[in-house]
Each structure stands twice: as C-alpha cells, then as structure tokens.
Length: 387
Image (cartoon, rainbow, N blue to C red; front, side, top):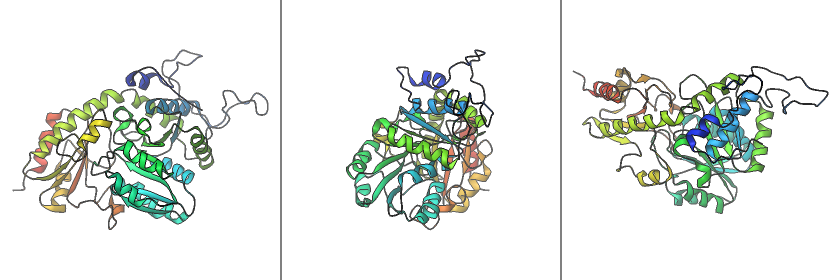
C-alpha cells in the first residue's frame, strides 16, 4: 500500500513525494524502469515486490505514491487512460442489478462508457443535477451503489457541493466518486470533503504538456484500495513506465502552472462576459456564476477552463473555433497551450439526443499559460463579425 501522508505543503509534496533519489547513483530524478519482468532471488523471492510490470513497476509506483500524497489519500493507482481508470472503478463498484447516479453535465466519454458499456452489464443509471443535493437524493434507489460527480463539470463548468452530496450518498449507503480532472488536486481535494474515490485523466493538468495519455484513481479507503488494485492488475490497463515518468515530470510544475491557468482564465472570462457577441459565459470565478460561492469555499482557485455561447448559433460557434489562431482547434485540455473546441461536434458528440446534450452554440476553451494579452486579442479576432 502506497500510503503517503506529509506535513509539507502542496508545492513541496508535488516535487518530492515518491521521488526519492536513486539509491545506486544518487540521480535526483528517478529513472524510467522500461522493463517487463524482474529477476527473482529464488522462486517467489521478489526484490522490492516486483515481478512483472503489469502488476507493479517502480516508475509507476513513484507516480502512484505521488498521486496519493497530492490528493491526501492512502492509495493511488495509475492507468493507461482516464477511461481505463473509470472502467476499473465501475467494474469494482457495480454488479448486475445495481444503480448509478450520474450528473446532467459530464464528459462525453464517461457518458458513452456508462450508457453504451456499463448498461450492458445489467447496471441501471439515472441523471441528476448534482449542483442540487435534493436532485441527487431524488434519484437514489435502494440499489444505488455510487453517485458520480464532476466539479467543475465538463463542459458547462457546473459546481457541486462535494461535502453536501457526500452526506446524501453516505446516508443511502452509496459511494461518492468525484472526477477532479478540471480542478486538479492543487485546487481541490475531494477526499477531504467526503468523497470515497477521486478520478483523474492525468492526460490533462497533471501531465500538463499534451504529450501523454493516462488516468488515475485515489482513495482513502484501504478495503476499496485493495479491490481496485486487484482489478487494475487483473484487467491490465496500466500506465507504462515512460508515461508514468512524463506525468511525474508534469506534476512537478503543477502548482505554478495552475496559478497561471487561473489568472489567464479569469481575464478571459471577464472579457467574454463583456463582449457583445457572447450570449453566456460559464466560469465559476465570475460572481454571477450560480456555483461561485460553493467553488470559492471548496477550491483554492477557479481553474483554467471557460465555456461560452456565441450569438449566431451553431454555425457561428464552429466558425469562431476555426477562426482562432493562438487557441489551437483540438480536443483535450489542461496543457500549457490554449485549446478551443466545439463540444457538440467534438468531445460531447456522444451525448447528442440525451439528457446530457450540450448547447449547439457552445464553445469550450482550455486557457493555457501564454501571454493573456495575446489570448484576448485572438478571441477578439475570432469573435469579430464577418464582413
């Protein structure tokens, strides 16, 4: 078990947890253990508990210890993608006949996994407005085993009061799962607020450089941790050594990057809110956002994601995405570079026609760490009315 508790502050933990200098050479950065199998000292005589890299690898162990420390959990588990982590978690928590509550605003890939795959196992699901604990309570059933939350949510930046929904879930005997990808552990730590499991796409802010795909689970429950670790090994969708090393490298600068993401996104959101061709802005840092007070209570910053609706409907929203030049048209988020996308046709196409369908005139921004003046100028050009 990779339990990591520290008296140090976040920035120090991010750099040092799981990062002990190499005992042989003294290398400050732990090496990449690009190996599939390990020599045994006699049958079953494992060195450090390592036998085969699907089961455990020293580089992945370093990342898992680091993730646990960042989220204040007892166990971290690293996967080949965020959806691989979600799949492992859902297979661990749910059985045929069980029920799951999901948010009315969620990542399209999560919805696809639940609606197109998990449902085939005989698991039922229903949708709640997780920003309203009463809505969550209204969807609970005797067979509900888990409540799934994204906060901030993707792509409408909704905010859920984690402590309040944790209390609702706990009273029903259900686990609370929080996807913390948009916030990162630097801005929000759901386990401390009552969540049972935290989910991350480490592809995003944790990796931070758009050069790796990965996922993670963190929990403070030792029994659940053992179950998840068993399924991680049995299913095999683990993070490889080099991918683990890349995420670890990204995490070292997470705090300073998030500070810049926050500052830039706030400026962008304020400018969009004042723009005559913007219908609505979704950003929890704006006082007008319905979740602003809750976000201020449970987060140390409001994040680098901004969504907005454009006057002129879907056609104009698509055109804005295509006219941007500093903002790169592409999916994903959380990298140092700014990205722009049309959720209805890109990341959230899978929710079309469902209760999670997103507005057709919606544009989503992942605000990077470039000069904010360049970002503002680029958006102004992209929003300029056509001649």
